Image (cartoon, rainbow, N blue to C red; front, side, top):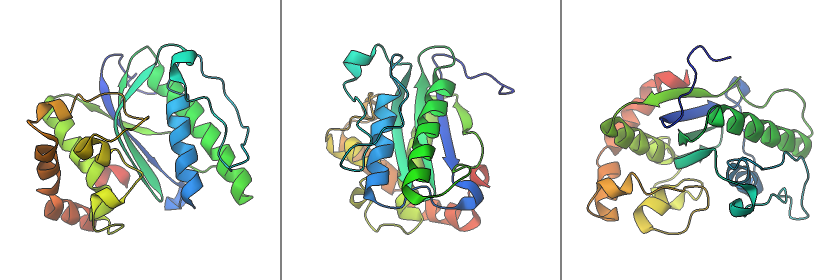
Length: 215
């Protein structure tokens, strides 16, 4: 049990990384599989499955309308080689905990089978930070989206396909995100782009000294 229960209606920064800081994604299909699971397990009637499809991606049902009402709402996300970040609103009691438990267990099993490995994939249970203000929500969304750039993974944020950043700045379709709540705080998508990129230097300095919540 968590010392402080996650409260329905509130938004949380959810993150975790690989055990011993090791990679949790090894090829393109791993990212695809992870995001399919992120869509599948957010609905209340989604069935837990370890099955695999012919395309090396588990044949999850991503028609969320057929799976009942969602128990969480994903506002933003970013996947990195050895960790992930989500901004999630809990829509029903225990929604985030149930979502992440089933989601992470399913993905860990997938990786263990694919990589012929045993043991835990993630460094314990997921971490969570309560978002208490709109200002904090904006800044955490920027921090989440800046990860690929400040870490040196890419030189252009839009070149990183495993993030909701392109959805935010281009309006392109994204099955994982279900809310435009953050982008509505700006006059335009381009204003959000400027808001994020304005802090690249600061973000790189944070990366240099290591972000405390990930250590």
